[in-house]
Every structure is written in C-alpha cells, then in structure tokens.
Length: 203
Image (cartoon, rainbow, N blue to C red):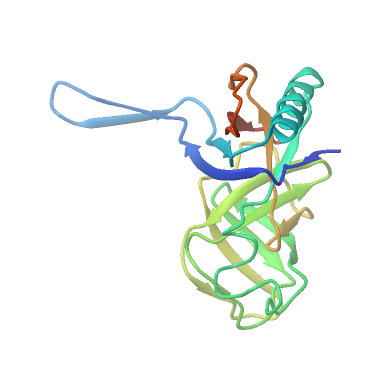
C-alpha cells in the first residue's frame, strides 16, 4: 500500500528522464539510442515549516527510505483532463484498457462520447499494484461509444502492461520512491523549508 504525499509541499518540479542518448557521427548525422525506458523524477520543496512540521516531514522522509515505501503523488494541476473540473468531469474517471497495440497507443472503452482530451493531459495505467503515469500525445475528442485509441507519451515500459488494466483520468497518481540522502536537515531558530527528491517506481 502506497503512502499519501504530504500536504506540506509548496513547490515542485516533476520531469521526465528520456532514457535516450545522442551523438554525432563524422558525417554530421545525429544518432540516438535508448538505453532505458523513460521515467519521472521530481524535486519537491516544502513551504516555511515550523519546528514541529519540519521534524515531522524529516522523520517521514527517513521512514520512507528506511522501509522502501512507495508514495502516490497527485499533481494539483492535472487532477482531471484540463477541459474539466473535478465537479464537471462527465464520467467516473476510469476507463478499461481493451488493447495495447504498441508501446505508444492504448485502446480504451468506457470514455463518454464527446469527451475532450488535450495534449498534455495526464493519466495513469493501473494493473494490480503497478502504476505508470503518462501524457496524452495529441488532442482527441472521443468519437465512439465503444472504443477509442489514444496515443501517449513517453512510450510505455516494455513488457509491463497488458489489456484489461485500467486507465485513471481522475486524480491519476504518479508512484514515487524517495531518493535516499537527497535532503539535508538544517536546524534553524526560524521557520525554514526542506527540499528532497523522488523518482518513479512502477511498483
């Protein structure tokens, strides 16, 4: 069972590591290779914390690392597709994955006709206790009451997900692990902030 991300965070930078390497040959051609699947990393900074809050967050981070815990982070700007609010979303927020024809496409059922998905909207694939957080790669208006193909970016990890998993569009979680030794506990007389790093952990 994953932990809930703390409410004390005031600033975040969550980005994708591409897993790609680039180089040029003697003729000037750009050559690329992929040495790993893409994954998310983040740097998180709390607001100004009083002594009790600071000690609480510091101990929580230490415990997450010590017990190798997973933490589900829900990005406050991507709780639902950007054309909607939590109140106006025209379905429950979950769709069934009918097929994964390749690593950059999923075929979904359960999306309402006319649903607007914008490039950059976020969703999470859920298969048992495995989570994968991805972006919509192109604008889509759902045009079928049965199934809809969606292109995602970056591509899915190889050999992890199969049909009959779930796609979450409401409060999609990014599953993270706290990076060990990524924060320093500083003792101040006044309120101060604390920064730490986290990396995606599919399970």
